[in-house]
Length: 397
Ligand code: FEO
Image (cartoon, rainbow, N blue to C red; front, side):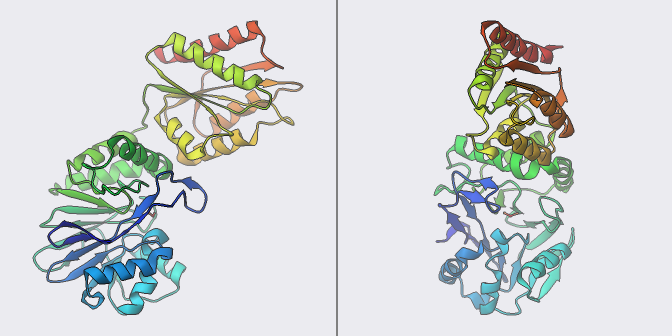
């Protein structure tokens, strides 16, 4: 399949409708994904990125229907991760020696993965590649999200090929931001940012400001996953600037795991208290043991505060909470408050442990937490409700 974006610019990627896990098993992709690659035809013909290895043969067969492979003069490899570079080996068997334009770090990542010595042409920020009536301008984007990442701007057509940035793991036949289901598209863009780019917030903001300072006219942003931003492409740049600045919405999320429902009853009652104290706040509640961890990370990313509960099990917290908090530490989230709670039978260390774990990954703990021995009775449930009220009220201080 190929899709003409405009004269001389063709999408030649692969929509992966089946993908449900990415980065091994570590990232959920409920709505699939796409590996976007682009053919740019001027006096010279350029392929921007390829697709994931399992689809290499399919990709090349489709590409042959769009262009005689021998006409490809240059390949731009914006990033070495295998979802974009995985078809290079197969493709370069057909067109050996074709120059591969990439960053110095991409030479390392490509050689390290494929053990091939291709005709690498190293580019740096500001370098240009003339293809006839227009040219590519390269902008290195280290740690967005690998050290090898590269952005490529095409003059004339005024298109930014943004590699992973501005992408979504979202398989859609609509393909363009103005045609896609807006709620699905924006939810997937946020999940992608929260789980992949949030650790690099400072670099994201700096790189966007650097690109904006170039005053490049922009008609389209072509990321390597999800929809093409052709209608008001600046909207996703503005959204990234918001997300990059210690983002939060008026949301409090209650996260818990439970063994015999004591901690669950506490969680639900705390959520009631939060809502009582602040009817305007969005309150969400998740059983962490049953929920997708990447979806929870996205909810925490959107929250101004979280309330986290675990029973005490063998003097520790349940592993679902320990795993979640470790993952939140990787996301480097800032400017968020937290409190802990939990039911226990014998020793009751979980709340203190949660306080320590949450502090270690950057949350501001607002109180000592709330413990209940065995199942909460009505009086203890009243304490839970008050705990929720106090947590919500803390934001008005
Ligand atoms: Fe879509 Fe970092 O690869």
